[in-house]
Image 1 (cartoon, rainbow, N blue to C red):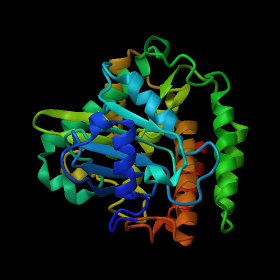
Image 2 (cartoon, rainbow, N blue to C red; image 1 turned 120 degrees about the horizontal axis):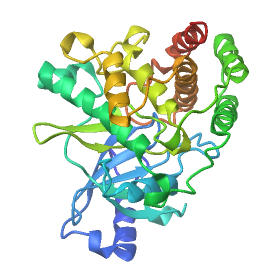
Image 3 (cartoon, rainbow, N blue to C red; image 1 turned 180 degrees about the vertical axis):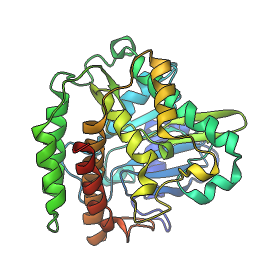
Image 4 (cartoon, one colour; image 1 turned 60 degrees about the vertical axis):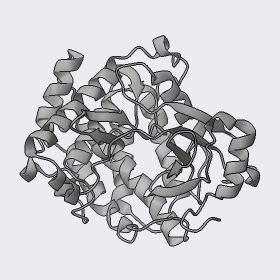
Length: 344
């Protein structure tokens, strides 16, 4: 593999690009920079082609069935082009696992959008409190725009079965959890049981992002608050309150996280409260505030399961990049948070 780009052989990838998509090749050699290294998919910025590109591929190890579906993510961003939801332009999809592709796994290519993700508190210093507030409320507005979208109108009417979505989600994440078990987590087990006992009735179905949070958006001030919503690998048709609950969890995770830099959200520097985000969301969507305790608890459970999978890969040496050494500390506070919401 090329130095600095684990999971991507640039020589083979360049040859694949020339064979299958010569319109995307450039006059010089390709270079790649690792953008994200394994909390979910692995993402690289590709330079030297006809235009700046981003390549997304599954993690390097411990990829469970139904997870990290490249074709699914490619399909949804293709469908959302031209809608109120800003997304990169889909360029190419590879579904082969042939090592001659440069990855030995499925991947897709998309345009590299301007801007940066606000993932850590230190990044807030580049923005004024007014700018951070503007970005936050725009994020809530875009979530409402996503949920008011008619999936059939953009070719996603068969993107999933909305009926029974919550029950299937619980089964799916239990399967993911069972496949990543490396230690005893009795509180997380208890949260899983409580969620199954209290599944709410769905009030609104639509296109669900599945991982809607601040650091999955690109901020491009002063031109625009948000230039793109990224990371659609968990998207489906289903109960839209799942996205709202997850956004709430991430907005308030600074109160429970053992890592204070896990999220950029910090009310002291201008970020509005989640209640304000919820008000913007409901006003845009034209709906009343959803009843969220179960959805907040489910969000805590899902994030804990995702991070247990990352922890499993980290212990197996299958993550790339840094910052994974504290991943194992999240399961307990997340389980406690989820159980607290179910008891409220």
